[in-house]
Length: 456
Image (cartoon, rainbow, N blue to C red; front, side, top):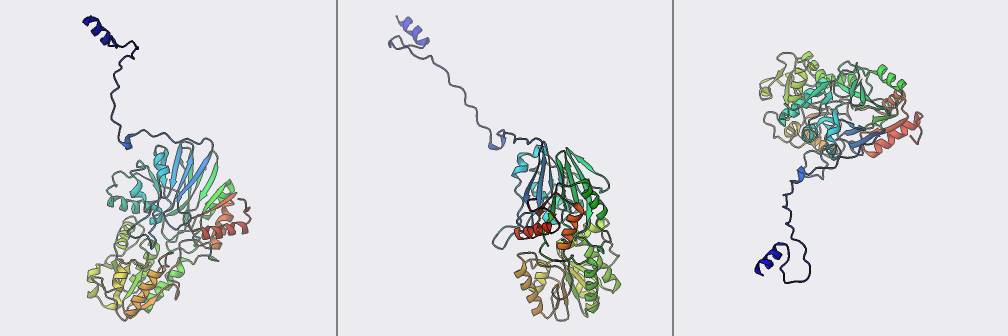
């Protein structure tokens, strides 16, 4: 009997209960859950037979320009810039585009295509490059040098892959064909591009203006732009920054003449504050300093580094001995000194701001100095620039700025430039980009004036 009960127990019953019992099943071994980053993600859907354009920055704002172009399994991204923080963004250094759409599809990302070397078009690259799988970067020679400088700071210079563009030839990237055209801007080697897929053609202008006497002597490729227009363009994505300003943007030649006049008229030291990226203007200043017997003293890290890159790559001609260390500035007569500095936007820790507040190690502003602010305030920086100018005036300096003389011109086209681009491209649709909403709305009005349908 004991044996029978034991036998029954082994079979799944005690031999006492008359109710049938379910057989014993050993529970499965619980496998540990993989970390969240190892969980397999569902592949996003592929949209067949449609060309998708997805701006992830640069619309309704000035900065962090970036636009995703997608056709089926292939994606390219035009620009990857950052934006400087607004006044209420305390503790924020830079704002970068939201790249979640690209991260989820990085296996389809074929390239980052860069129009030019300004930070609002390249500044975010080192922050997102690893997350995007180290895609190749298509850009011009100067732009590659400026990006490489950033990559070296972030220890990514060994991973970066460049394809240097030649506007004389098209480029096949997946199912896309890219065709570049040179434009004028406030930095050399700036390009727009046509992007073709089996579903049509769009044109992205990048930042542009039409300058027939540019500082570097290189004109926009108007014949090629017109040729692209004749081939047919479904949509034009065009720079809207100066769409509220009538006329054409002032030529760099006029700015150069006024800068030379300021150098000639200065009796003592002359201090010129400008953007470090204005390579053509910097070349003009170097030429005028040489012509009028002044030595150049650089102040500001970005100015020093940009000039080194531009000179190394052949975009700046710097005569031997004309650039001297800033720490030696007080060893020269005042009328032989030209200080080229950053800080034209009133940034608190910039070189010019430190001069204005008596915190610069080598330069103290005094009566007899001439300070040329060769820039216009970026939107949001007006109060900082006004404070800077006020501080400089308190030290007795003579101030020259754009409201007194044209010592700066924009790199962006005004209304007549924008209408000229639309007339050359002849797009079916206009998509104003690069700017706040009121800029884009004003650009749309210009499109109506040249005959683009309101529905387009």
